[in-house]
Length: 164
Image 1 (cartoon, rainbow, N blue to C red):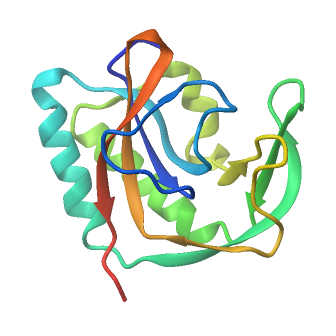
Image 2 (image 1 turned 180 degrees about the vertical axis):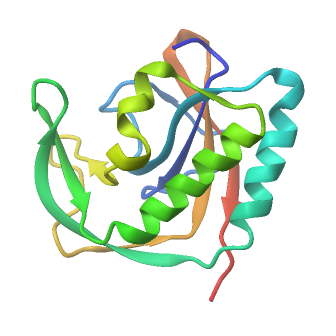
């Protein structure tokens, strides 16, 4: 992954624009990935983020229920809580993928196995930090995260879903 890549998430642990964190599993704020890492030319980034914002602002915030723990990853050593109510997140994921692709965004090839029909919304646990089965989370924004030099990530935009 090279600097400049973008990612779309719903932050469970809220942080402001400008927040910087290390790109290690333990340092990530709790989140649900909506669109995995993708690239867009610098000249087209503002237009792409604008298209995402236009789509997102037409949506109402919604609730999801946290499901049981499962083990993900090639070695089944990444503990996550799968979201029990997948339908609305899957629809959001699919539509965001479509917006990214229609606006010159290119998904990182290694992420293809985690999208569309293969997408499973989840929250990765960090040791004892995570959510519990039955918890309710509110999906109220789409957050744009950029990969920086030195394996750092930055929250660059918070796009809010409309209130009900």
